[in-house]
Amino acid sequence: MFTLGLDLGSSSIKASVLEVESGKCVGSATFPGHEMEIMTPESGQAEQHPETWWVFTRRAIDKAIKAGRISGKKITAIGIAYQMHGLVAVDKTLEPVRPAIIWCDSRAVETGNRLFRNAGEEKCLSRLLNSPANFTFSKLVWVKEHEPEVFKKIHRIMLPGDFIAMKLTGEVKTTASGLSEGIMWDFRDNKPAEFLFEAGDIDRSLVADIVPAFGEQGYLLKTIADELGLQAGIPVTYRAGDQPNNAFSLNVLSPGEIAATAGTSGVVYGVTNKENYDPQQRVNTFAHVNHTSENPHYGVLLCINGTGISNSWIRKISGADGFEQMNQRASTIAPGSDGLIFIPFGNGAERMLGNRNPGAAFFNIDLNLHGRAHLYRAVQEGIACAFRYGMEILQQGGITRKVIRAGNANMFLSGLFCQTLATISGAEIQLYDTDGALGAARGAALGAGFYQNPRHCFSTMKMLKVFQPQIELKNQLDEVFDKWNIHLKKILT
Image (cartoon, rainbow, N blue to C red):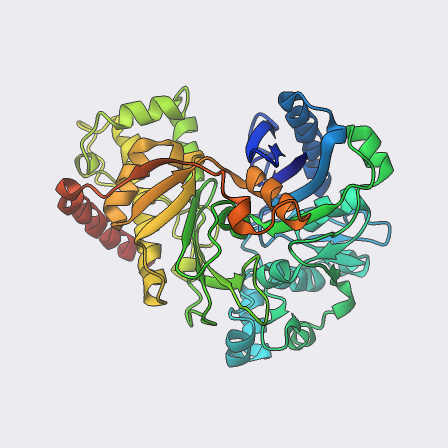
């Protein structure tokens, strides 16, 4: 028995095929082989074409099935993970009316601030556990106000993963977890936030019907099944935003557990059963994949936009052959990068900095000393410093950082980064043999009832590596963080 997991990122689409009995990934593929284009019509804006996602999704599915050397007819359920906070709007024919406004787009910051005031700041924080800020609902209001002719065409709005599910099943559905990540979920009333829709003058009917995160959410259309070589009628049984899904994929489901990612953006995601919020909105609280009103589980998310994209940027401009070469060269430089400091922002407004975008910057460059290897190490250290900065905010809300679980992917493939992060944060870093697409495939199996419970679901998942803080380097890296923090404060004032 096999399930298919899809992970819709902003850089690429990944598909993985899970053998349910063994818990092994038998085939996976990423498409395209380069980073997907992010369009920037104006500074601070970021868009992608939803139909491009769909084209690349089909290619990734085909490649994953071929890599697994199985018949697509053996796949019995589908799970979907997706980039969070995006806005996809379709007309009555279910065609997109404009490109998707994706997560790192910052055009709606002021719109969200106005909604926060108009809807009532205390009401938003106590019932949404967030301000509307620059999330999906604010982006929708921005379209209404700045593109009225486009807005008139909108029949339904959805999140990126809802769009892929719609293309597979023909049905427009969403989840409570998804609506909470778009800041459209009222935790007090356990339904879409009517008061916020009224404040934004948005018709509530634009929101899709709600299905559980786990369970049958629609069935594969015959035309799509025939094209992909799958069995018509198999169910989509799981969907979640990329960070709740990453936490799920690492079996981070209980209060006190923490997951991290370091892809294009970096995220620390902790689970709690306490209904809490950050008054400054530097971190955000959403409904976790296993949240119910009777048994609440909240995911507290810290996002750092300029993480993997910083490492990718330095690779491109330096002409490095690849990340492995960069890691090898960086390892030849002593911790502290001989005084070179890197601030890893510049990829849109940073929520943990109060929705400011100070840009990325190097400090203390010595033209007679620093070379490319210094740049590579300073970038990784700067990203680790940004993680620690954010973790200290999470700690103020009661989420400590004793153990952090991560998939063996993206920047966590760098032993140098893992060791630096462990030492500079003081947390044990555990790496597991999983990723977002495989997590979505596990979610599909759990949602279809092929696993009895989460414990059964993750019984075969293996921990690959552990990085403990290096006590002998702690003082040195603490000094790096202190200098990093000083430079950050300078550019924020």
